[in-house]
Length: 403
Image 1 (cartoon, rainbow, N blue to C red):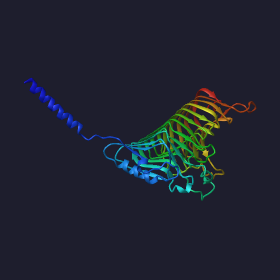
Image 2 (cartoon, one colour; image 1 turned 90 degrees about the vertical axis):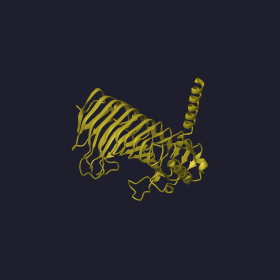
Image 3 (cartoon, helix red, strand yellow; image 1 turned 135 degrees about the vertical axis):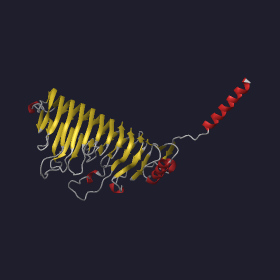
Image 4 (cartoon, one colour; image 1 turned 120 degrees about the horizontal axis):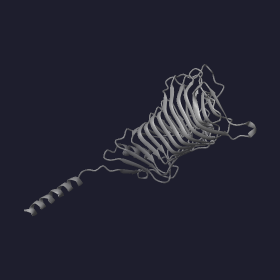
């Protein structure tokens, strides 16, 4: 009898094992771009191959997709990857994606653009080569109304719960990475580089986005390392090295009527090396919008030969002379700057030039230690304050101007 019971149990277990093993399982499929016709000769335009890969990967239902760009140089014209997708997408770049050198050969404002996608992960040891050198002489729109449209390297619009890790962006025509209406996005271990004299090659531009993190990243460009634009909230920046460039800038703000508030910014454990500015908030003097800039924390930041390490400028005028119709109406408040140290290349190491109509409120300077590295005859570093309410404590070098 015992043998019969044991045999019955064994038979049931066998049926159970067969049933479980026969269930369809979700598995990740790898889409190697070369198997879809992509050529790594640095000359053949691979747009059609990449579009085919994306369509197949994005539409896959049973399991996630992994698009793989192996080592090699893949020439790529302007391309857009459009969602929504039916699964999570990994986009692994180990080779070089090469942009057209001629700016006219990219017929869109962003060379590689991702839109309406969730759960996108871009990573690898590869390079996005924007080949911007030929384009930079045409970047003169401030004085030439017929200037050509130059493409950003990589853009994200309406992309959520996603990330970029490990890749290099080289010599963009304009901005390297652009984010619009992006939420819950991580950028880490990215290397962004362009010459210090390359115009408008911002490293990372963010607008109308929330809950983003930038960490362990090196940025050297001819414009802002990171530009924080209207509508940005809850942005955390840490362990970033910035230089050359114009620093980490909030703004410019207030130029257009429909702008939204900027709040919830933290910048920590960051180094500025040879930049024209370090910490910078800039608003137009004759602003069209009344918005709020608030809840900012800057802490544990080193300045190495920075032009103006701490700079709030509410009389922003990039190409003077500017038409002055009134004060800025952008309210700046609740800003804490703590443990900011290093050297400046101008005597004014701290410049807080706020609006007469809406003065800056609740600005805290805690343990500021900035030295001017000029000649002794020119004297030590100074701080300048205008229309600012707040306090200073701890180290006060240069001498505090808030009292």
